[in-house]
Image (cartoon, rainbow, N blue to C red; front, side, top):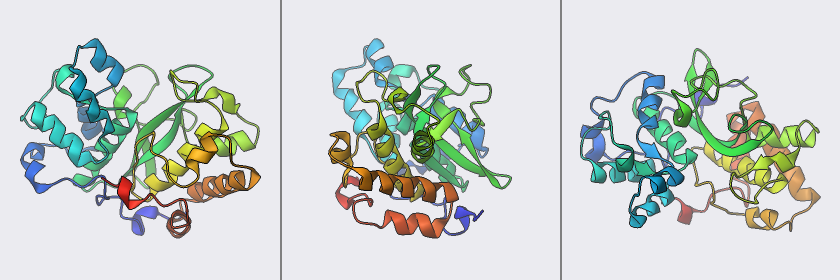
Length: 275
């Protein structure tokens, strides 16, 4: 299997994982071991529902819309100028989703020169029988991609959140392939707390995962190309065949195929969203 790191350098920041030099003093004591970096991120982000329970002011919830990891770090330092290695009270963590845990982990791993990438898909460990919309991080170790979920590190949802098993997290492409092969019920895959479940949710995450493999890690609700039409049920068999191709290409880990497919019309993230 080709090694993507040889062609797509995942040890180097992408457009949404670049960290400004102005923030480097806060990273001076950043760990150099991958799991410890992700363990640090576990205490830097707080989910919106938890933030509400803490009584965080309403005007801070816009943090949830931050795309660049650099903006996340800036928001953290505006709340508390201490280095990122200093433990923060939950109310002084940046408000974000699972995607923010994953992308901030990815950015800090790349900052330390560790090949890393965010993955968009579905976790099967939050509720038995469900695949919930989720993001995790992968990093390269001993010739393989290790899947780690910074959000649940230290918890008991899975045996090894620092090295997820294959069936504990499915990328969008993996979930789509499983659906098309009849191995999963698409109606059990979707976004917790919403009515957004089914094949369209899997299609959307397959496209976001393709972008993430090209070092473009979007927000969970970002849409481009024909994604909106898919969510509205206005696409047909030819679009499903495109998702088949995305799933197959992402599974190969072939950098040439992945970058070529991402360059196709409707799959490349518009420049206007990269901010």
